[in-house]
Image (cartoon, rainbow, N blue to C red; front, top):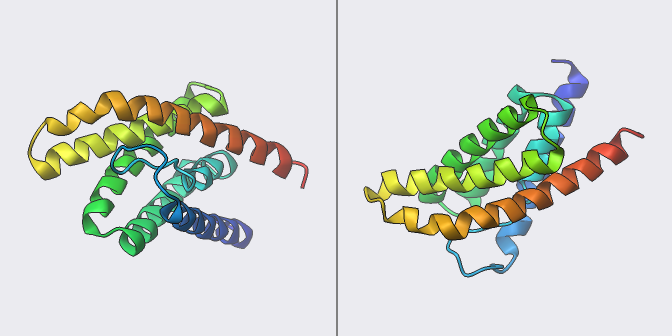
Length: 161
């Protein structure tokens, strides 16, 4: 990696952490435990398009470490890690399928929630977390679409710079 790329990826990690902090300060939008818009995922998805899957994985991992350990704790780390990995895998696959940026964001949002549900089933040793799927999956579509639209606009405007 070149120095410029390392610097830009580091800045994207910082942006992800700041967006995660802002999101931690926001009141819940819906009465579903643990649901967030996914603002920090903007940095992950932008990194995927700008630099590739390895750098996006790194930004996702830094985002998970910083936001969950600083703002939530070890349990949140496990849920965030599962959600982050599932989301990253889905976004990488969606870009290979040439989906639109909104479609990639929606895939990431839905699979982030699927990852968290899987983590909850493992951690709690029960399948009752599956009952959250009908609530979380549509919310993942909406939040992922938002992330996709923001990333599409960011790419459009940063190409001019």
